[in-house]
Amino acid sequence: MENERNPLHIFFLPLPAHGHMIPMMDIAKMFATRGAKITIITGPPYATLFSKQIERVNQLGLEFQIQTVKFPSAEVGMPEGWESTDAVTMSQNQHKFAKGLILLREPVLHILEEHRPDCLVADFFFAWATDVAARLKIPRLTFGGESIIAVCAREVIALYQPHKGVSSDSETFLVPHLPGEMKLTRNQLADHVRQVETDVLIRGEASEAELKSYGSIFNSFFELEKDYADYYRNVLGRKAWHIGPVSLCNSDTADKVVRGKEASISSHECLRWLDSKRPNSVIYVCFGSMTRFSSQQLVEIAKGLEASQQDFLWIVKEVKNEEQDWLPEGFEERMDGKGLIIRGWAPQVLILDHESVGGFVTHCGWNSTLEGVCAGVPLVTWLVAAEQFYNEKLVTQVLKIGLDVGVKQWVRLFGDSVKSDRVEEAVKRVRVGEEAEEMRRRAKALAEMARGAVEEGGSSWSDLGALLQELRLQRLASNKKI
Ligand code: UDP
Image 1 (spheres, rainbow, N blue to C red):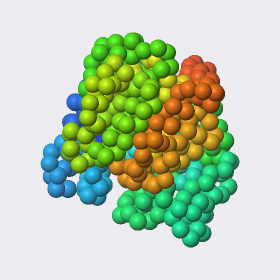
Image 2 (image 1 turned 60 degrees about the vertical axis):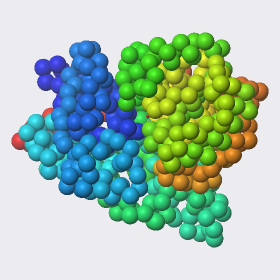
Image 3 (image 1 turned 180 degrees about the horizontal axis):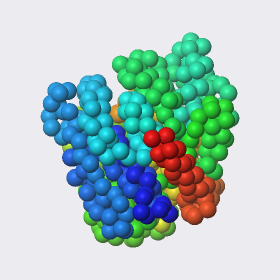
Image 4 (image 1 turned 30 degrees about the vertical axis):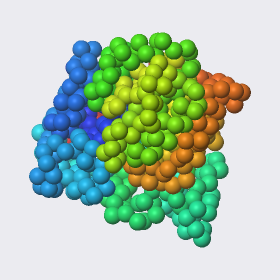
């Protein structure tokens, strides 16, 4: 524990997006549990969304507060508060969002100058954060919310450009020099890697700022990605601390429920439904906070789930083309008792941790992947965008705890199309038979390791301790210089 009279004061600057904000809040809580004083800088909409979570942390007696700074919506031509809505994920709005992030520099600098913290943990996308921290003579730590394998693969692709040596977008190429074999096609690379996006520049600046930062925090644990963790530190020569899985800092039902948006189902109702099912019998289907499928794709999922004859809990976000009446006729009546559809937000960690859940159909967002690992369930990987194709390789080829549904194309937010027979086959394979048992056995072993990593003396617990110690020494050194 920190010296309580003079704890480290650490500011966190999360990206206003659920997939980044949720783990950053958990990381901040972990720092607070180890004695640091925490301030989160965010806009009023997220401050409201996360108020219950902060209340819970404060009830534990931890020093944890929010400092609000308004997102410059008007300046970028958007309505007030839009940064917490789905509008932000629309590709036509992304340059406005990026501009808003740049404009936050001055108000954030002002807050930091006023409070003089010991360290700034800022999301990868705040390219200016390294400079701002340097002005205050404090370390800037970077958090990108990605797996280590994804960051290593992206770095190597940027360095060696293996995708430029193939003649078509569907021809496979080998990502060279990585500890394990990774084959991809250009179709599976993000737009910005293929240089077809305007955000190349923003990413480029953010990557440079990451390189110059004090180091990176990963929501991962050494045992899960050890070859890649070593590669990142020893071959790429980067400083990193793996302190996850951070979702495990929420052990009570109440803590799991207040994570993220307000759930569209009460925890009581959700648990009652899950309690009525046999252990390992339910397939949980959820594609993160942003993916929006078309109604045709949702129909294929519905048909596939029905044909698989497995129990399922399926989370459906708003439909892409706004047809709300997309379910096959009579589906809900036929699935009564067998399947539950939650439209909106689900308490994901609460669901995954329930013993009746026996498989997870996921888009392989890194948080979801790791939450699946912690729950010890085999995964069906259904990729959409971002760095999910790299995460899939980790799940299916390195850890061997999942199988892919067969997506071939990176399609921002909306996903490549998958027919119902593929859904049916993948869901059955992950639930029944010897292959499923083998994956389950491996997944359970990893879940044990994940818990061990964050317990006192575990790899993540020790890495976080080492980081805090380094920050204390940094503070001593800079105090001496003054
Ligand atoms: N999540 C949730 N309920 C939902 C959808 C998502 O709690 O209905 C949480 C999920 O547990 C995870 C995060 O939102 O922590 C999504 O992050 P991920 O990296 O998996 O995907 P993204 O949303 O960034 O694509």
